[in-house]
Amino acid sequence: MKILVLNGSPKGEKSDTMHITRAFLEGMNDVSANDIQTIHAAFRHIDYCAGCFTCMKNGGECVHHDDMREILDEILDSDLLIWSYPLYCYGMPAPLKALLDRTLPLSSMAMRKVGERYEHVSQADFSRLRYVMICGCGFPNSKHNFEPAAAQFKLCFPGNHTIITVPESPMFNAPEAKSVTEPRLELIKKAGREFAGNGKIAEDLMKVITSPMIPEDQYAKIVNGTVE
Ligand SMILES: Cc1cc2nc3c(=O)[nH]c(=O)nc-3n(C[C@H](O)[C@H](O)[C@H](O)COP(=O)(O)O)c2cc1C
Image (cartoon, rainbow, N blue to C red):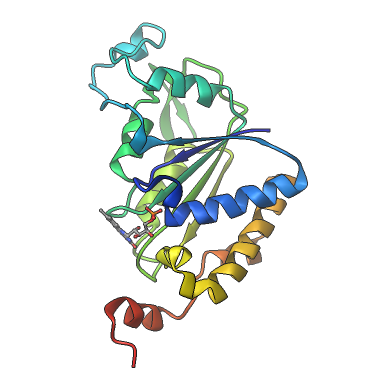
């Protein structure tokens, strides 16, 4: 399977969230070898969408001439897109949002009603694509935190999506937290194996991997430097 990782962290491979993503991919590779490419959005030349809609009217030509042409080709050549990013102000970091906006050439201006909502009619065939969101964050709470990002992802990719959100993710880059992060990464690998096997992650496993690794108040005390 061709997997394209779209990394939204400005820290590239050093991203806390990429620890989760690499473990998930390792699990997927345990089932069968995959062709994996990673795009670090912050390190690429991606101009902001100009909002002119030219691309939606002329068969997909954007007015910008930057890395997005190549990135769109890579997206269309993939079977699975993994959107890996840290939560920034309850949403995705700006470099990845710029990339998401610039996928507009894949759609036409025409809109159609699907269920209770409208969506744009495609200009390209990406019907086989599946989508995974892997999102880390700095607070220990998931509620009142991940909801806007998850809602955006569901609306952008209404079919074939899986959402993994992990709070307390700076711990993945803290060697002193290994005793709790390593077992969590093992469970995330297991989730990767399940996903590769049947396209889903069991509800009970999902519940565990998306829960805080240590109690919320303990995490807050460590971050605040108030541990007795
Ligand atoms: C600009 C900015 C905004 C952030 N907003 C949130 C937020 O809304 N909720 C949260 O829990 N953490 C927030 N964080 C913390 C990051 O999500 C956290 O540090 C994460 O582990 C960084 O992951 P990365 O290493 O993959 O970039 C924010 C961090 C920055 C720099």
